[in-house]
Image 1 (cartoon, rainbow, N blue to C red):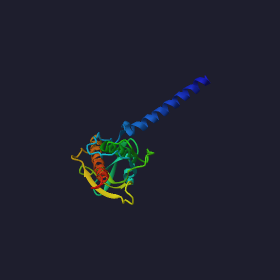
Image 2: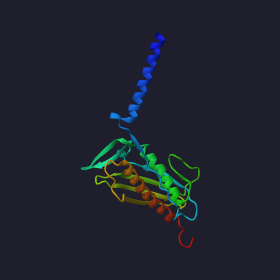
Image 3: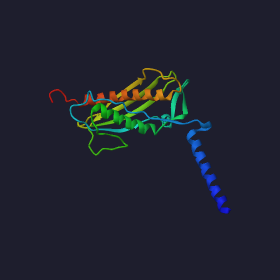
Image 4: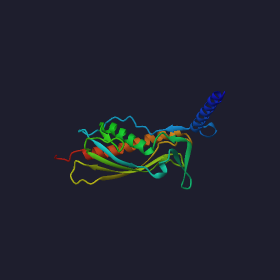
Length: 211
């Protein structure tokens, strides 16, 4: 009998643990949590440099308010609200690092784009530092991205980094709380940032006249 009670006790404990785990996945009131990623865009290397390049993304900075897993949205009067049940599938910084590397790889026609998450043994021809200053849906529904970056041509002795900055916004305004559409717009806007960075690399990689 004691064995039966012990077995029943273990079964109840296991069921409680499973229920607690399920409630954690579903959230309060049985609400399911949804997870998202900013995916790479399937670019083709239309303006790729003549010679293959090795590119290294040295770092990508994301402001602290975007480092939470909950997706941030701007509200009026300088406010930010976080979606409890709509979250990033991983650290947003890591997601953006990997996606930028894949976007640049497609745009430049190269496979050797390294990041702090995946270093390459090949010495880089270009090093990039990226700072994301803002990247979220604004109060008017438009997704806005503000970024600045530096590109260093390591093949040129005593070269100084070329700096640039850009503010982008989505073509449309996804509906409020439509996070599938919001993340899709973020993916498209972030792809345009990669295009601008790739253009800077290609322009700097072109030989000077007479060389």
